[in-house]
Image (tube, rainbow, N blue to C red; front, top):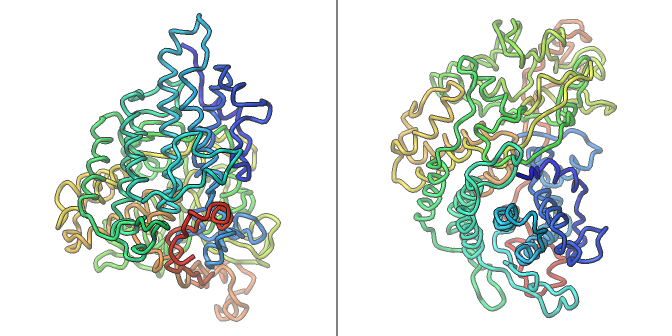
Length: 617
């Protein structure tokens, strides 16, 4: 069988797509769509280009636009865009994460592919091969189109559904202006497409085809879409009750429908019942590694759909601590609010009575350094006996990373003259230290930046089983009057993978509201830095609480007076550590009701007056 891999697709089509060329559907080196769809090899490249348009969450900066992290590269374009979101200064003409026109360009490409793939001429000696693959290509393109619509849906809610290349006439845009479809219509379209293609897609792929769409991917997209649609943002939200097309058509449901949660639960259970995927857990005696290793290896035990990535150590270089011997750039600083979301290993939130949490004093013991357990000393009690996913995801003061090669623990507290003396100073950016933490998740212990060894072999999980388990638990909890075993079962399977105790633990865990908090926190921890939190806090309608107000890091920029008050040598490491473990405000953020959905770009409304704007914009 011909082994056309998505790695090859990505290599052919790695160039970025201009969002300005809305109607551009043909690679620049070909003169027309006829060139592409009269040659099966070029048609396959067209499909590869659509695969390349899948969300690139590995390099996305959503984490810095919500209550996970702070992007401290002050003069970097990503950081500037993150500040816009955090300060609420983005607008109808300046929305860096919008991509309205780019997605409709992707959709138009998919429409053309779907319409023309059946008629692409095939060499006679390849007829039997393409008899299998042409229907599969078409199903893949329909999935990709549905995925592109989901990307629009979660940003804008109600959007126009365009299913034919003729929906937009490049020669006469005035005659092809469209109105927005309702949220329920958009959701119905996405989920019906997933249903339509699921049985045309294989349950698994051969190794050479890894990264291609499977039945599990189609059902997972359906489940995620229905979960979003059941959530408070879209399910009876009174903010949007008056958003209507100019003909009076309501675009958002103003009436809460509990049955939407049951549909979401059933869709998630359909993925689970495939019986194909299992939680990644090859290290039963090492819960930290059980979680960590799946994010820097190409293991597909749990991953339902990976976004295929070329070998790269860019993410390692960006996120490793700065100082020698780590030589990274510490791109993101996890916020103290996020650090505090990790439970104790006994399953208690740190604020709960009986948790055992202590934010004073230090401890000594052992920590996993990515390759083996190492003895550590002088670790703050803030970091003692926490959820193993904390140690897999966060660099903190005096933790260890590849200790045999690095020769010392991570140092993020201030000391000496500051710049260059700690691991917290971003390369060439004086004054931009990450303030107490770095992101460790996704980083490979096989990579030694100091020796320049290691290749960075990882992919990004667009869908993985742990998310589906959590989707099911959330949907069932919201559907039922109180949680039952169907809620606890799959939530506890995610926790058991990292040796966290089963719920319920607290009395509140046996109530709908209490379990809602637990599930939301479990998603926060399990799916950290995977670009879920940005959307979750919006669909739950809690962003106005968690993404607004002061956010905190640690005191890595102490004043001279603070250092002097320690009675220690003010340039010593000991003085810096003595004043380090204190939350300090790094930013005051803003989030208004209008920010729950993105605005339709004003340029699009100017071109098409049938488009009505979202709430508050």
